[in-house]
Image (cartoon, rainbow, N blue to C red; front, top):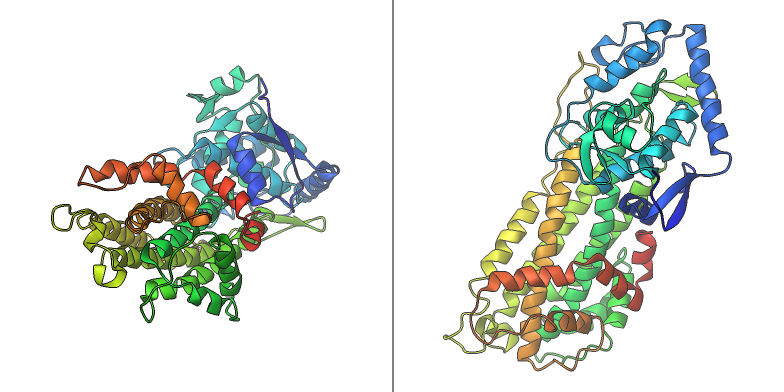
Amino acid sequence: MQKIYHSEIEVDGCSLSLMQLEAAASGASRIRHAPGSLDIVAAARRAVEETMAQGLPAYGVTTSVGAFKDCRVDDDMVHDFNKRLLRAHHFAIGTPLKEEDVRAAIVLRINSSLTGQAGIHPKMLKAMQDLLDCDVIPEVRPIGSLGCADIGLMGQIGAVLVGEGFAYYHGERLPADEALAKAGLSVYQPQSKEGLALVSSNATSVARSALLLSRIFRLFYLSIAVLGLSNAGFSASRQPWLAASHAEDGLTRPMADFLLTAFARDAWQEPNRVHDPLSYRCAIQVYGAALESLIHAGDVTRETMNNSDDNPVVLNGSLITSGRSLPQRLTLSLQSLQLNISHISRNMLNRIIAMGRRELTGLSRNLTPHDGAVLAFGPPVKQAVDLFASIVDESSPASLVNVTVADGMEDEETFLPLITRKLERQIDLWGKLIAHEAFVARQACHLRGLDDALGGLAGEIFKRLEAELPPIDDDRLYSSDFIMAEQLLVDDNWIDGLAAAYPFDIWEKGRA
């Protein structure tokens, strides 16, 4: 039984976007092949069949894999070999990935196959498409790849196609053969190279990277809005923004232009102090560098999504060996982004601490309404420090770990799956820190009497919190406040609405 979709996305192997992948992963949009793309797939398939007919050695096609690369696979063993290949690579463990991650992985494996370089049969493309259309989503676990083809994870997707392993049918976990039967689908019989094409791909890690990146783009925008609220609460000078708008320093200049525009209707008094702490004065440099890293990661991710990482690969009608299974550029771009998120987080923590110091703000210590009687943000600052330390801990590089396996044949890896797990934890913590800063900044703005003075992007944060969270007038159970602040602010639809109301062109293009 096929699902009902709200829209369709055309995939052609070269133009899939981050936002399209997100829509397909959510189950809201159906993918369809671009006209003529199946002809390209069929032509590539003929190259595989010609290699077999000529008896030429080809990794994973006429030979086995890994340490057994020199063992020949005879023609009468093809179906059995490809099934055993899927079974042998069904070993990932851990809490299953979200269904949206698995949908995205299948979409990417279909998309990269449309390049005509995977060498699979068009029938296998249809079998993968049927999983999506009928909402049969393989159960895939995250731990089982070194980041040079997600063999242990992709094996769990491939196993479902042949009726083995487990899958979710309309959300119900079932043995794969039962899920296929309930959906009215047949078990697929893998042909030569197709077992390898299913397991020897980074589709799960690339998919998770892309979906996490979409979240990061939103959190980055939200953190900018909260930066404005902090500036209002601290009564910080806008002069550093003006200075940055005249600097040639990467993307710092467009960042400055956006801040000057988005917060133009947020009225707060210029300070009497000579200048502000560096966490305010230099924030735009921190955010400008992070924006540059974020946009670069988006560019690399889109390129990776629209490339074949197969080995061997079909090029110009020939099946040749390839090293494309190493996602080096994507891995390094994500690790750079993790460092930038850590720098933003440090910048945020320093602002949180600064807002509690009355010698800097002119407000009461720890933003208390009654000095000495109400502790206010004195004790909770330790939560912000814990969040920051945890965010930094997740940014430690993993790609330089080196282990040699498969009789010395596999001695390079990126650990991209590990990095996506670290990145997912990091951005969850980052969202909590953003909410923490927003809650503190709202209290500072309240003490300054800015309730009706914030009419720009900073005011949107203030109003969002004001509707549900009263300002602090006495000590209370603060955990509920911070949890509610995160629920209110870290909301995809609401952030998208903010971005539509206060457009930031370079950011919008970067996340497309």
